[in-house]
Image (cartoon, rainbow, N blue to C red; front, side):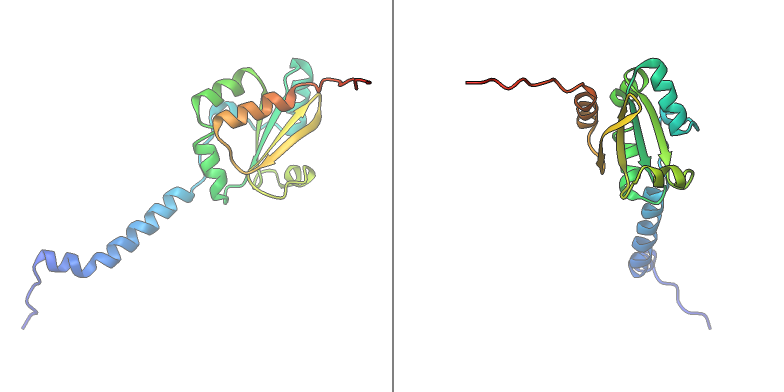
Amino acid sequence: MSKPKLPFHKVLIKNIPYVVLLGAVAFMLIQNRPATVPDVLASDKSLQSVLADSAQTGLPVVAFITSNTCGPCQKYKRNTLSDSVVVDWLSTSVEPIHIVYQKSPQEVAALGIRAFPTTVLFVDGKEVDRFEGGVSSKRLINWATAAAQPQALVTPVDG
């Protein structure tokens, strides 16, 4: 003798915890996959190569250091670095480079990176500033623009 079939709504109610759990796992897997970067950051050049390009163009270098296993890095790449305003700025105002820890661990170590994501600004081949964590598009552009400016000499006023 076979068991009587439960009505669909009772089967659904009985299995809601499993459906919710499966949905949550799927969402986490989707959110934690490495985000893509815009084409302007998709080069395989080394930092030294980009610094050499910078010496020719006179543009500052902005290095974005991320890890494929870092959630905040993926958010930074999906939001700030993929913003059309940032992509245009990266294409015209700086020499950008994206360094991924899993692809270039020695380069990341040589920069003394201790947290991901880290953004580093180089002017005339020298590091002038860095910050850890992600920021908005506006803050990124304002930070790099201000940090790349030569510091004005301040003459003390006597009297």
